[in-house]
Image (cartoon, rainbow, N blue to C red):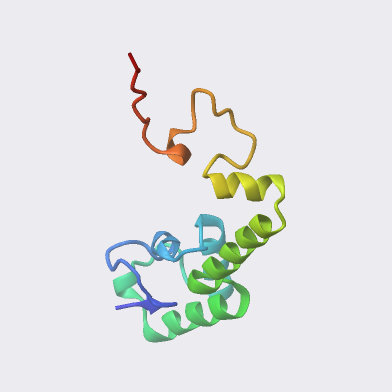
Length: 121
């Protein structure tokens, strides 16, 4: 069982795809990590040796910010924006889209389900 940064990698997947299950690692950084650790991209996680897992773990710890550390940094960045009351911070606080998207008809993901409007008589 390959366990890297507190995440169990799926055993049946190729290592370049399995590394993307770690928060903060995508396809591009996965390939760069494997090149730096000198591990083949097409090997399945269950076929990795302990030395290869250790090499991958070492590259990630040396050069990448992942999982809890990355989540904490992102949360602190959002908190800073909210504290200084900039436009982006206000949008975060109100739960609205931050990057200039239209909100009149769209952005249901960010705003949540529609609320029924009751008519008064």
